[in-house]
Length: 437
Image 1: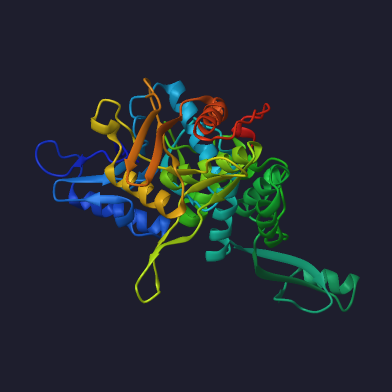
Image 2: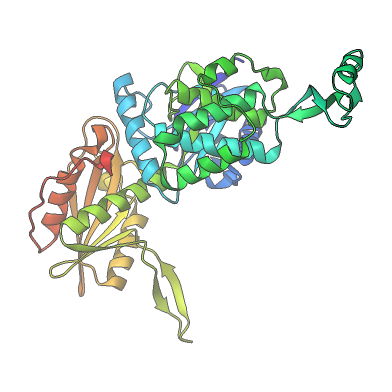
């Protein structure tokens, strides 16, 4: 199936009217319907729609419909070189795996990226796909069985019955029809599950084993791809085709990525804002402990109280670093793109107002607004000083380079950033890359 591919960055306008229109409203409706079916979420939270344009926000990946393949990439990634896409895809994979509260959705009939290394995430997607498929229906075929039995099962088979009665009186040659799960589709799924079992652990291993128990009556082939050749895909339900395609991608070690490739397969939607926030929380939690801080992630506080005494306006700062002595640090991550050439470097006023209210309420006088950066000319760190009455607040505007392989320099960069803001000076011993976390 040939689809028209539209590649845009997050928040980029896709024209819907005039000579430059890229999508019709019918195609937008199809995109929304696919989103609802596959993610079980309202597209309103992930798209901005007006009479003139459509924008995708806070997600990246491939969304296929019958006519259109919508490829959404992070801001700054549209014109990257192939090797830079490889690095970005790998790093987004690391972010996604760290996003414990994030969700991964596998889409069928998209195009598969040859970039990135998402093997563990791919196994998890495959196990989920097998669970959904077998939860919807069990694939079985009618098979004819023949055996010598002590009583008639099904029907007697002649003339074999006459010969058997002469040889062993009281026995019958029976033939009956039954439903059998031991078919190529199930053998392939069982073979892939056993193939990846040594590469899984913890909750993923437990989920995988539950699927294997359900396939106890199915033979596990030494080479699942032999079974692949026997599958009649015109007779396989769509929900099973997704699981089968993921299984083949696993055997060929082709983990899906956020970029469209040239091979038909599966692709994934990554909720990038959520993944970036959760990943940086993991990073700061690990880094903070090594620097002697107590880390609070997504703390829950009330901003104030009404005159009645009832608490008002719950706030949940992303990260707080609390030292034994010295200055505490408030950190907020923003999945937005800075513009070093714009007024105030592209920092949104509402983000600064949020930091002021959080810092005032929680007693912080040091803060970090942390943004991703994709592309060349990464901006230098900036410092915003706010002085008003008794308020003394310093907000560092900093970025994390998403094109740095495995975020290798991030630890040293963030350590220096924290050290500059904190009154506590502690040396950091060498640590492994974040990729090993």
